View 1 (tube, rainbow, N blue to C red):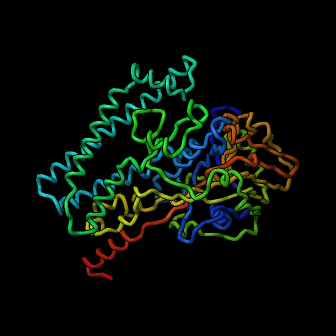
View 2 (cartoon, helix red, strand yellow):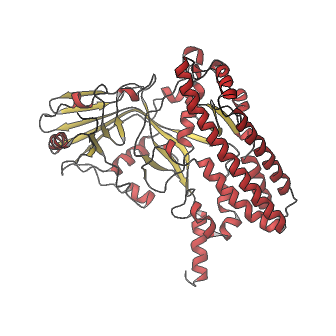
Length: 476
């Protein structure tokens, strides 16, 4: 099968009454811990998540595992039922929330500061943003260049001693330090400028929230490589990683921290949410996604697809034209709840400054706003399998074309049974069983997939805006 063959959707037999709504329903019913107020946002690509509960000395990566989870949870939720972006390529929730706070503080300043002080605050905000941008660029350069240098000279990417030597003489060490010192000074100046006695408690709350958001205690320096690749990986803990927050070290990513209601051992072993479901001609019509989201999902979401050229796709489609039943199996489907640190306070989304300035905050909280929804949990599945039943023998050689060794390329419910190169120590290759009228694609029982987010919707802003519109135009 050609490596450049496009991904093509596969249609169902007309008698098979199955839609994305059915899969959505299946998760909402079976995922353990789903709350009544939560919606699910499905991922177009349900990528494998590599997790280890072993210490670095045993080849494990506890803190890098938490970093893998963070990268999927610190994610802006697009206001649609299916997100067509991979989490790590989308905007970070923490960054967008920081932008929201930076705009919100302007209204506090306008109310409480003199015009010259307002101007000074605006200048400090620009300087802070410029420093953060420069630091990010410098550290990104160091990360890429160090990994290339380490591979070329036989060093482990986690050899911090060698990295520090390299960074000081060949990297951006001095430039990063300079920018970080400037950033500290600008933030201190801003804190002093805003440190007035505000009569309105909500203004004080916003001021304090901005200060808390940028404080180092709200951040951890997460390892960007597996713990066991670091010379001191066994010593990683909250105390040590907090010292890496805001540091000039490109081997750690300084991020706003979150905590998880389930520990790694529970994530790796829980049997909660196990299901075996049958979808066939008798499956009832569902509109659950439309009810929750006002839309049935992304048009780009193919319930079943295959990486195949035109002739292969034709043969596969002919097989599926006589499909009679789909059986979906999962060893465990569960919710990993996100507990935000004090840096994130969604109660500010309906504060008076926001309500009084709807056009300013609509990009954040309007119908298509970046903060209209925010993540409350990761939805993970382990040991996913799909079985197809046909009225005739399967004619196409699926095992030959879509096994891990052949490059994979078959997808169902957003879960792509991918190439062996996509699987890590704790994410094992999938298998295919093909016999007469049965065809089964199945993950290893220990393979964990990130299939979506549990999210909540912020409704106060839109309710207030619509109320004001009706009042202004004399309606309602």
